[in-house]
Image 1 (cartoon, rainbow, N blue to C red):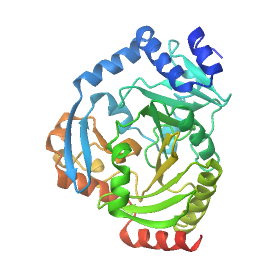
Image 2: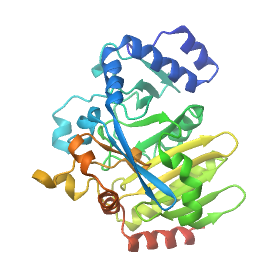
Image 3: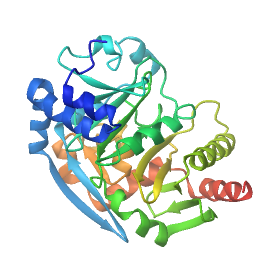
Image 4: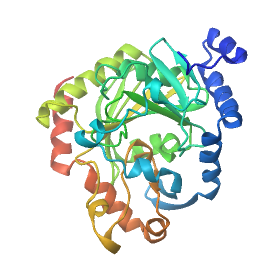
Length: 334
């Protein structure tokens, strides 16, 4: 496969199962050898950022002009059918190189970054974005990249700019505020669904976001709990396709996995579709919900306020009534 790197050090690191350092090395090489990637990271120098402090957590607004294509991507079936899949290996730029992971995924550097080091983890084969069959892979990736990186997943109807091709993303740990603030948020706003020595399963409503979290050292237990959640959540929402969720998977050797599952009701807020001065180009996905909300137009970034951010976030999550029912149903399942 032409896309795979032939760097000897990367090959040695992979033999040691050190994918975190292998990805770091790939990033350094690609920045030197691939102009499109170097240009993408040059745009990060023009990024502006401001923080809004909430009770126990913060949300950053980031002006990032390089994300205009992704934020405004057309993801309807017609638009997708009329373009080439930009994640299939045969359509990647000639200079783009990757690392094969478990003979299933290719670790690629993302030329339109948000993170200081941003990766796309694409399935080798072209298949739809779908978490229920691949959640276990996400856990493996987050464990094997855990030295430096957090792994995220955006659902096909709430953030994935390529819903036709299965992929995850990875980026620097602690870049998203929620990586640091999770325990404080959980302690302040969390309600226990189930907890014992091996598993912590909570529901959290922090006032602007609603999510469930799974924490465990036991991978099988994390998978089993996620599958239980997925089934109940899909049934409650009467979903025949994947329910709208975004995931963040964070791994530490001492504590195991921490998976955050954001519970969505809609893809984009009303202001995204507004006309003229009312329009704000914002499309919340996992990184935004993790606390770094991207605005690719400077005028939107300049006028965004804490109150506007609150409204945007609240609008794209399930409502209070649904959240209450979800919590009750999940509790009954244990």
